[in-house]
Image: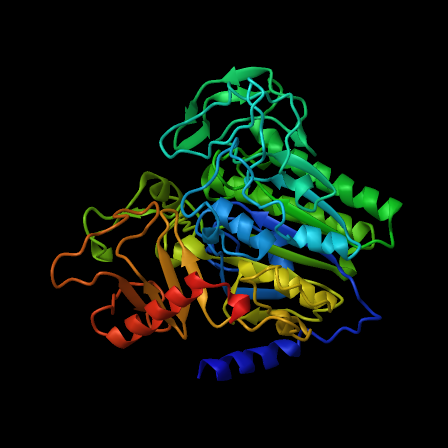
Length: 519
């Protein structure tokens, strides 16, 4: 039945995504805008009851494909970024749970193909502007390389780092011609700008821990004295506009790939003065409005330079929203949940960041990994369409390759499947996705096939408590939900459907044992 549904969906989409000849558009520009912690229910095109105006994000939806069932490969940021750029699940690396910090060594292996390096080989100009959060090779004050990953519960401010020395292993080492941005989240040192392979300018001070109501402003550590949190997103917007204008003027015949991982609306919530009061959801909502304005800036400059028609824009988020957490005490019975202070803050405005979905960022539940996902390409998509076919951000790499009509080498994007037929292009070397794989902050796994979602342990595996439940005799050891009938994951069918538990647990073991491209 699922195959029939997928075929019907694809046939419907093909009426909106017309086939494009190679002569007409052999190499479209590619722009990926990755919001940070934007929830499924934040944009109004996904949630009619959202208290946050998002006209620019809504424009992408109104003129392109709006995916209703798109998922990040992880419910936190570093693993999603790794998988998006490499097409390979992050849990196959050294990072099997958690995230990196601002001083972690590089996570992307030096010989690992990325979407940037592959597009560079196809003749594309490549640029990255924004939050990296995939590690860089820093040098310590004693001249030795920093080799320690982030240790949960142990904060490091970077005083032991010589930030005046160039770094390696960052964006410019994995396929990007240029980079401007920040090394990790703004609640992690160093609080300074980075350009290509160095801090620019390097930190010249240290800052203490600071809090503002529910909004962690920053952790203590090294910083530059002129660096201001509320100037980060406007600066990234300006740098993006400048990059596109410069490239369009200097190299009008060369296609480009621009990766724009934003710092917003992740903590610290720091909307600039212009956007204060622009939403009906408090400071968080105002920060989302500013995020939407960034999207508008990208659309405007592409339109002004004549690049919009043949630019493939993908807009999405790295995981679900944080502002929707719910806390039970010792049970996973939803009837006993209560909102966290952050959830109470946004709910007080009548806004629910993850809409109807259970859970929050970091969780194995749908609220942790189901995200907005929009594809806009005027030359290739003639009218808007809602797409219910499940996809993963993992699949972007293989899909872009199919859009160019160039098969991937065997070593590239080993877990990436292609949804190119949904945009009128043939699928070349990779299969259609049959199984969704989910992964939480604490390393819990889930898989989904044909409406069934299997979680191999109890608990959220993330921020919602209980994070893990040790079952008592006679209780289920894992979770099983039929999302078609129960999209809010309220009824655990683990004991009632042992056939599905057995089938999906075997499928999970199979995927963990070898890359999808080898099947």
